[in-house]
Structures are given as structure tokens and as C-alpha cells.
Image 1 (cartoon, rainbow, N blue to C red):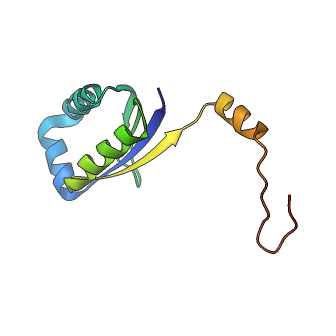
Image 2 (image 1 turned 90 degrees about the vertical axis):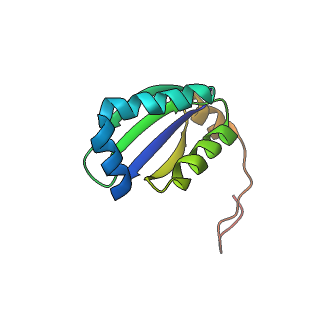
Image 3 (image 1 turned 90 degrees about the horizontal axis):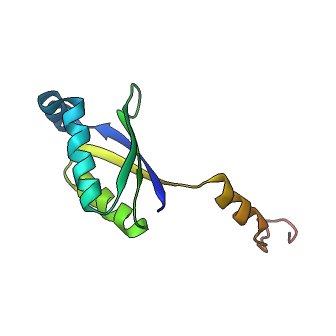
Length: 109
């Protein structure tokens, strides 16, 4: 299954909810809806800085990841940024694909 990284930034409303249910309570709620979507959480960490949490999950496909992102962001409690992750072997395959690209103003490569 493809892996996705979520960077989570809580709004004031989301931070208030987090204060009520705590970090482990929130992780349990996230784990539940990810599993219902056919996925599995690999890791879940809270952090300081621009992002309040980092979550890595395996999901069936990109449309499931997009559906989760839409549902979460629509609540207004968090700002969720989704990144599809790739393995080193995925990059090996990509590096072997020949792409005929010409940069702006440059010669054909």
C-alpha cells in the first residue's frame, strides 16, 4: 500500500478539542477512521513548530488519501497537508525512466 505523510496544524478550535481528549485519545480516533478507510497508521508523533503532529499511514490509494484530506480539512479544526511518500526502490525505477525534457530556453535533454 502507498504511504502518506500528514503534517497537522491545529486551529484554536482543534487545540481546544485536543486539550479535552488528550494526545492518546486523538491518536485512537485517528487510528479508527484510518482503519475504516482501509489503512493503517505506521507512526503518530506530536511536535513543536509549524506542524503540531506528523502521521505516517499506509492507505489503499491516492483517492482514499484525498478523501481523508477533504474530510479533515472541511472541519476547520486542523489544517492537514498530505504528502505521498516513496521508497528508495521507487526512485530507482523512476531514475531509469527516460523522459524527453527541454528546460525553458535550453537545449533538448
